[in-house]
Length: 531
Image 1 (cartoon, rainbow, N blue to C red):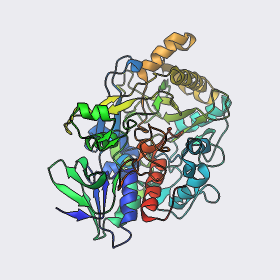
Image 2: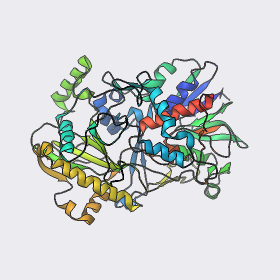
Image 3: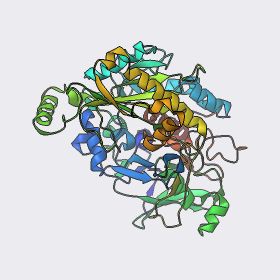
């Protein structure tokens, strides 16, 4: 049986960091196991082609929920990266950390070492920002963050129209105040995607003490008593760990691996014939995600991205990109957006993702042509779903119930977000460009029930599943890991991905997940001690 000091399960945003940091010491023998392949598809690395990666599907795992009553019986389809770099290799590259209140809420829930003042220095140290530095930003870190190289006319029009609708302009969503509209900073560098694999693994993978296994699934963690001692692979191979095992497989795969390993609700495990190692009923509970409902409008002139990925136009864009690293292919597509407090609480509850096109993953274009999509999503979901075992067979997909809109507060927040998005389309800077609104059909917003029905019919994930192995205090029976990310009730096993978030951060999850991986590696190496 092969043996390593550390085994990291999942080569995504967090796993890339953990493996790289642990292998910095040549005395540590580290294994990183990734179910997908290497991030070799050229479309991964060109910012403007990330939708092609999702459409091709090779580097994406599409997790499909059970039929969801909150979505009018449709399943919730959640794409997650199945490739080195994970979500950071297929996402829209938006660099957002969330709000101060997100992390202070974690601290108030008992995770005192995860307050904003505790995590901000970590964000700064891993960030290499092109423009910003100082109190809120770092300029020397491995994760490159840059400003746009291309700004689409419709993105500019949205920003102006939002200001005309009463929203403030904001040049830094990760600074002192999140609220406002503007262009997003992105995890790009010199016109290329800067994924966690690019940032942390490119140098690390050259080290002789780090082995990276791709195209390999982990079925479960192996235990001797309550001590994690290795992993069982899908090919039947057993690999031993003399040190720790770190699960970084994501908020849907990680709880499945835990439960197959005997960690979860004792009654449910026993029902599947699985020996119980640790009775932790919170495993697979507390599922959260951000959902959005788009407002779409057709524009008068052919200025959107429609058709730019085909024919002569596509060839021209690719030549420009290859020769100069300029032009539309340097765009991350979701260039602009912002954060709005629609409830008057003093804390933004809606985020806008704006596409200068009708196109978006999962949308069949009923009205192909030139348009703009404004997608409000709620930031702090109150609904909770579950990820449980369907059977003891590792090849069976998890029994995934998203329970979208099971708490009515979520749909009421989106109602306000959609109403605001409509007002933005009617503001002068967009109104002069728009021919007609396509979705929702004009007049729907005048009937509250019809608008809610529209939202349930079109809402979809923005790819931020979290919470299914939540961090908390040992007195909380639903907590799965402590502040040091060690799994309760067992030894030598940690979770270090978005699963551990007690509540979902108010924004895109890539940067926070990288921060979680960085802190996990520091905990393991004794460089950062949780309070």
